Image 1: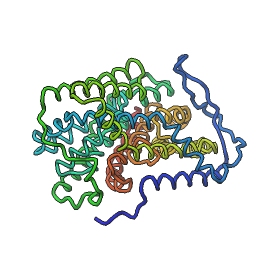
Image 2: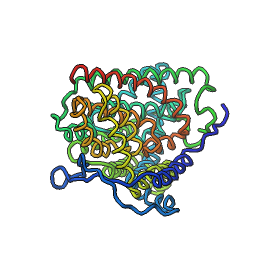
Image 3: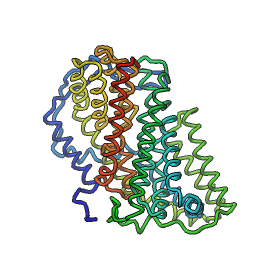
Image 4: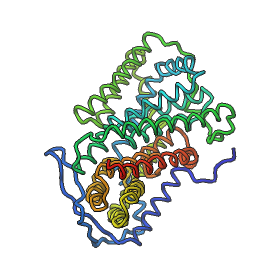
Length: 459
């Protein structure tokens, strides 16, 4: 395969930072009023519908895009440092041989059954996103899955597909996700977790479509490696094929601790509102425990931790650069201007077209606000009353929000987590886009059809 003429992901994002600043000179600055909602200690800002107004904001200085990049890094510091901590911890855990032993065992057992391996793995990731909103937590699995897929004569696109197609479908058809469904339904004044039956049905349908799409690609690559979208990318370092390591009792105990650590965090998210800080602490504790069980000395642990963290430097940089785009738009006060202009275009449409338009609008919003909860707090206070005006049920408006947020998470380059995972898996963004766009077309056909039926049936 010839080398792509598309720019590197970091170059692409830098160009988007420049574009955001140039657009800021063309659009009028504007803002919605915001109010605090929620219990004391857990309050969040929410847009007040109908309060948009233009504001006076000085034009951004010529070199604002340069000063915004360090601020974007600072704004994304929690996930950047999380990436470094997890990278270091995984480096230590892999040095014990536990991960290689697990991959070797999986290859022996499922190497001849790629359908079972792909379907089962993607389903697990999708369920985690649909139920408890997992996404950032999946980043540590990328190097492991890439190594496994390469050993199975597949490629890094398959590894990324297992994680991010699963997560995107999990968010897009989320049944219980506390960061999207719960927030959006609360803002819309709906009973929490209502409308689950349809969402679970959509989850099964869309997951089947995603698995089929990935299986077709994986089969094509395994039969002819030159058809891989990343055939020209060098994976000779950083993704070593797993050694033939026996799954000894000591390594099994490390893997059990790993699983227990993930379970602890899942419980902590649901019970104690844990997030990246706590997950980083859990991985540090797991690293120490794995080092003790694996018989690694302190100096070896330090070297492996530093090496594992260094391997993720590119991913961390891309995350910070991607966050800079939002920093530029906030400085210029144009994010609310874009939201107001797009939302206003739906007011005079028939109900079925309005519901479909809501999906398109939410998809565009996700480019500017790639956070699921952040998008809910900004858009749902506008979409809920707009739904009343256009004859669309608020439940359908929430569904349109879910589709627009979850599905476009798989493609928008402003999504720092996606770009970080692609960098971690060494997959150029244009190659990923070539893989995922056909899948998104299928999912959007399902989404548009569902929204129209939801209006007709009074969902």
